[in-house]
Length: 323
Image (cartoon, rainbow, N blue to C red; front, top):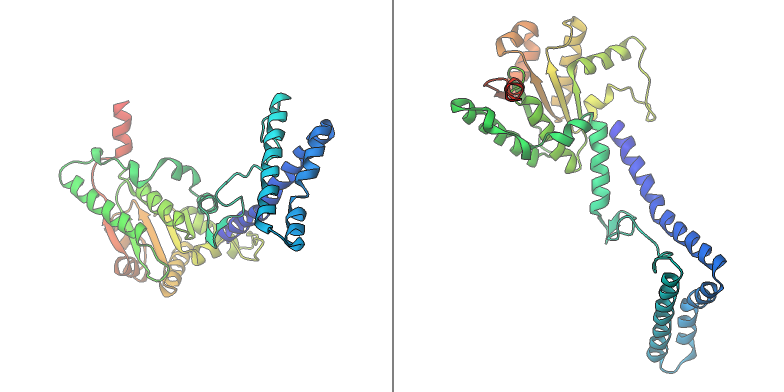
């Protein structure tokens, strides 16, 4: 799956980040040693610190006192080294190791727990593999605007918003939950779907967000031998059945055909049987869905999904009138 490929890519990056930072620091230190004999002399003493401490431990006597003396000398040399560099136009810490993340030193974990920097990188990878990286940058629960709804429509969208937030915050692989967003264009279906996707991805789950047209094209390409397998030997359509959360946008915009209906039934049925959660949004009314799709599809959608009916005036059109 694309998510797993992104995940492995991030982990490979972290396997080299720590070493790359150390190598870059050593390259800067060598540059200084080549340019300044004084720095070379100081570094020669500093590089023997561990050996000196080890030797002190084997010599007997007051070990603590000897180590304290060595460390005081090292601190003095480091101070003199920094001062020398600054006098010669370099930052005092020029050859220090500079990690991108000072918390985990670019290894991704602290005391066996994933560092926030690695979690962020994995989330970004998840945004890309989900298919809605750009949408996630501008749409979230925090900037959903209720001001474009009024009266009963306002109460209705608040209930849907709360249901969406509860779905996202409580998402778990262990409990299948499905949502069916029904309503006209510009009523917030995509915004709330994107908001859910962001929260679920941030919590470490695999999300795939795609239009119905793209989903069915992938199945069609596989059926007629036009699809290529990924590095894991899977066809693109595999992600729709394997991901933790599948979000299909704009169901009903695809060309009506027996093949597409069969593919839709296969996705819905497979994910229900596998206890995997799905969100589907459509501009079709319930009546139009019943006319367009077979009973076995609509019965699963209406029977296994929590239906959210979006009502109100097109928010996009309202925004245009305000400009």
